[in-house]
Image (cartoon, rainbow, N blue to C red; front, side, top):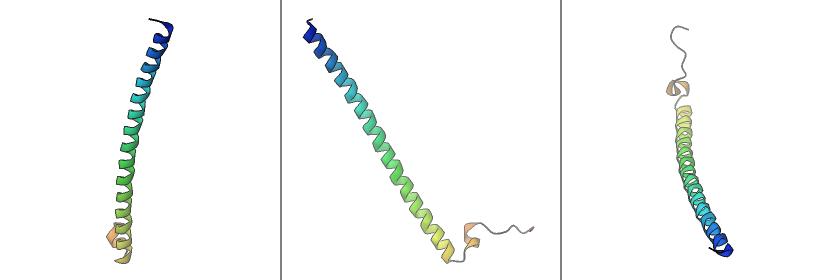
Length: 70
């Protein structure tokens, strides 16, 4: 194997490792984006529930009422 062949083989191996790292990063980014979208949806629903509770009388709907022993 000549010096050029060795260099090419090393470059090909490096390229393969970088392709795998890029794929893993892409997969992680995709998973994080899905999680963010899910959390945004959950937050939006919680905001709607809080607004509805505030409009319908407040604390009795949210579970923040004073216990009977006070």
